[in-house]
Image 1 (tube, each protein chain N blue to C red):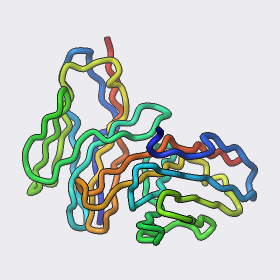
Image 2: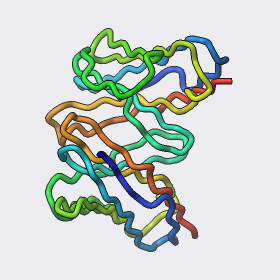
Image 3: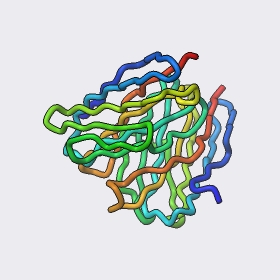
Length: 109
Length: 114
């Protein structure tokens, strides 16, 4: 079956580093995506991994291990505005994105 | 200069009514999608169209009928609305062949069925 698992909620302090993990199982594999969704808003694209390894983009990095069916999103130097839900999504072989339930991150001062 | 737009943003209606949500994208993308996000924030694909042709149709009641008059528009018509249809509906678009179809989402339509 197709499945994406990620923690439901996480909390962290401003200025800290947080890692949000995701395990996936999809029919075929067409990349692993991370989206950010602020409350009441649309998901916005953060990162895409199709090869193993780390992709860095400013304060955000995303890692993929295809053999382990595992990804994480790393957020550094956390800011209050990073409080949002972070959605892990796997692309399958039918151009479909399978989304996880999202991880709600709360950043405290 | 909005990339993916949806109307209306909010829709409140009675059970049994028929309603439509419209979506337009000006990104020149070939593929458009409809997603449903329920109260638990789970985002689930409903339909996907590529160049006006249906390519993904998940297990969705046939009360839901998408229509794509051209590749820039994908509308969603819902007949005989039920309480369980209350959710946020997101339209999205992507261009095949570009970074495995990174999808760009519209602002969402919050549907409340009373």
